[in-house]
Image 1 (cartoon, rainbow, N blue to C red):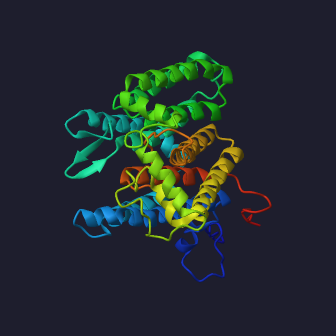
Image 2: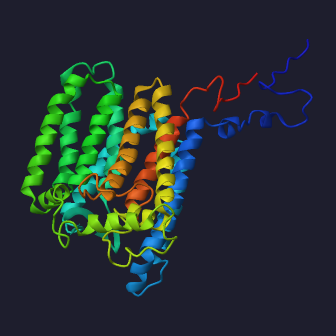
Length: 405
């Protein structure tokens, strides 16, 4: 009787290599990635590199005046880049199901960190108690809370995707948890971050397909809350009124926005040259943080500002392609909401610098100095890259993935 030998699938009898090697495949690890992945990754890296250069320029004078090296601020920022970029690509390898599984845990950790600002570890800066300090290391927990909130909203709306026409299912648990999340930030008087979190909640409901009529009451209540918080805070009310008053006090409310506009005007079309800003010499508060776009405009001019805006638009284009191409509710909600957070915050920051909005105190994602903000947006981009891997291959056209024959 002849003996039949069973070979592993795909094993070539003419191949002299041992059979176990035939079972090892690296194709899944090195297969072509979607166009959306490439666009997101490249635009995030370009903006991060841009931010590193601008932080070096904006912090050099302050570092020297503090008795240190002109590179101190840039080195500190660069350390967060070296940590954040690998973490971004590491997260891109995780499946979408992983983020659904850890959504509640992430939100719980984010809220726990946010609560630390009300302990002795927390401290106040710029009128907002939204920071903690541990052993000389400072952190803004609300930045990580934004990321956790986006993933949690996507998880809940994914599980309730067939029940979203019912107000009760939309209300529980989204509204109570949203109030807790936003309230924990507003308790520290950080209205700018609170508004970003509210924008995140509305965006998640929109991308989940919740009927527009259900938005009316939350929007009206939120507008009333913002007006109330503005009236109750003299500092906040002063900033809003100065934004509306052309004759506001230059030395009080209008000092920062006025110097921001002067920086942009000084830059003109081509800029005064990298490193040659005058406003960073103690004239413009938060030059490396919330107003780094003004320093960018002063040194690199309108052309430099346009480049940054084009790269942000490229990032938004790639992310919204994920929203358009996916059939998965979780992927659509998280991708759309993450984009509204990162791109929306970018536009708000730029709008503040050019005088379209009152001063709100939100950083420019990827570009502003601040390790917590940079880590949060890089991790958020890592989640987007993971979601981009879930997209089906395109049959033809740009970004097509070759099909196996």
